[in-house]
Every structure is written in structure tokens, then in C-alpha cells.
Image 1 (cartoon, one colour):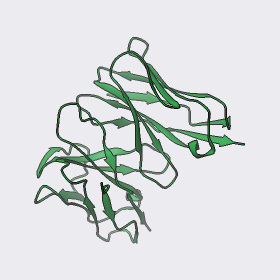
Image 2 (tube, one colour):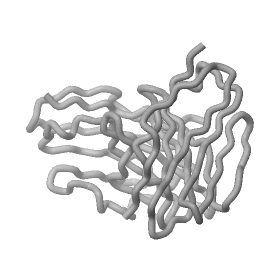
Image 3 (spheres, chains in turn purple, green):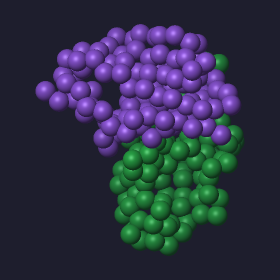
Length: 109
Length: 115
């Protein structure tokens, strides 16, 4: 089985940097996803990490450490529109994500 | 390119009634998924189709849920009879069927309320 743990809620200030952590316990997986989900909307793909290390994509970066069972999503230059739920998900044996509960990020002025 | 389409967007039914949801994936996407997302939780996979064949339905409550994708394009998900705990958003997603095609594209979802 898999166990994914993320903080339930985080708050941050517009223009700041925030790091959303995800720890997991699993017997094996292909890769780790991050999805963004605005309230009342469908999840949208942010990143997929297979190898250890940091992958940067504009204001968003995602990091994976398989040995530590740990990932994080880094959001820079926060904007109000970044207020959303951020879902960490593992792909166990294929590309199908098994989602955690998600972290609700609130960005305030 | 058009995204994943779902209908209806909202549905309210009483327990023990039946309901059906429809999904039209992105053109050319061979793989289609149905997820259930209960409020405050992440989406949970119910069933995965590749073309018109079922790849994984291990988490589908088969005593009350059924899904089909007869022509390998559109899909329907049915619940019969519904229970209160079925209240959730039902998300349809699709992806390409090619190596490395890991990105899933989600539809807007159908919000089901069972009273």
C-alpha cells in the first residue's frame, strides 16, 4: 500500500515563496506528480518527477528524494491566483496517480 | 484543442435512485479514467479504460457502480442505487496511450449530491 502525507493547510503572503512538503511510504513507484486544483475545478497537471533532484518550470519547482521518501513543491513570487489545493500523488506501477489529501494554500495580500 | 467534456455538471438525487454521468475525452486519447473525489480528499481512481477495454476496476464498487466505453470514445458511469456516501465530485480524465504520456487531462467534473 501507499501512504502520502501533506500539511492540510498553509498560508503565505503575495510575492513570497512557499514550500509545500509531501512525505510518502510506498514499496515502489514510477514517479511523483504534483497537481493544482482550484476550488470547484478539476485538477491540472504541474509536474512529474522520476529522478531525484529539482525540476524547475517557471515560478513552480518540484523536488524529489527517493531515499528520504520526500518531495516538495516550491512556489515563487506568489500571486493571489495561486490560492488552491496542491495534490501530491504517486504513480505506483504505471502513470496513474494515487493522490494524497492535498494542501490548501491560501495567499493573502 | 477541446478539453474533456462532462455532463451534467451538477446532479441532486435521493438515495436509492439511479444516476448516470457522461464523459467525452480529448480526441485521440485512448485512455480514459473515472475518479471519485469526496470533499476534502484527493481523487480516487474508480476505473481505467484503454480504448473500449477495462484496464483496472479494482476500486469500483461493482454492486452499485458500472461503467462502459462501448466505442472507445465516450464513456458513461452509472450508480444504481445511490447511497448517501456517494455524494462526491466525479471526475473524468483522459491521456494519450504512448510511452511517457504521463499527463492526465481532467474534465470539470459532475458534482453529485445524494439526499
